[in-house]
Length: 268
Image 1 (cartoon, one colour):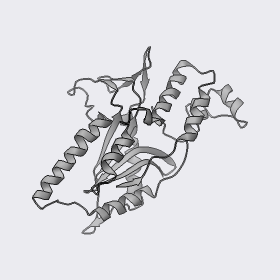
Image 2 (image 1 turned 60 degrees about the vertical axis):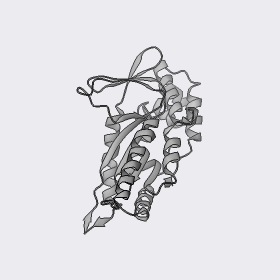
Image 3 (image 1 turned 90 degrees about the vertical axis):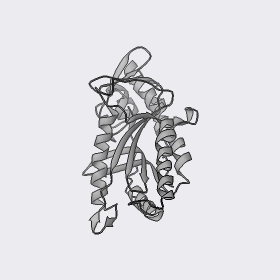
Image 4 (image 1 turned 135 degrees about the vertical axis):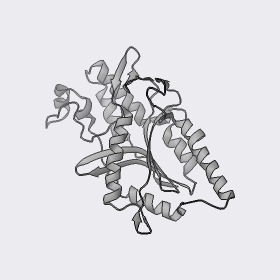
């Protein structure tokens, strides 16, 4: 069931395309172009994460889907691309990377993106997801999102994944050195994870037992309550990417440093 669909990014796309006309360094232009690709997943042949998640889960009573959830706790804001909640009220948090660049993950867990000439270091999406999950846990607890069973608050399992384009080329270290199993392609999500969950459910149904599962109405109520804490907001990309002099030409009120985002998260 679809609880909250993807937000419109028309304003953000317009901002970013305007920034590309400025005199920026090659690295900043690369970051802006990558952000544009992340915000325009429709160009990925219909295999972007939002499309696939909606296709498999919108009509299912066993999954609740929330896209583009913006939450805040104690002044710290974060954005979660996709959330799936199952009948056990376990939560799957997905950071979606819709670019098609080559991604290299080193043995130390460093993330490098190929810009056509060089590998550029970027923030670890796994570490970013951990930060998002910390905020999410506080929001769940403080807003009493989950029901109680026998007087005990339900504490959901929260699993973190990074979704890449099906065209992404990922260079990984051996699993024994660095576990990157939570970095998957969007089509892997549907072909493996969701279908496997459906197979497990069919087994339980055949046994006439679905242990600890909640009713679809409860799932919908919980997911809707979580979606209701969404804090609509937007990123001022002029503050994120534009150099000081260029930003002053665009805005009359000056500009904060290039790396200081008005909203804490933007795609890497």
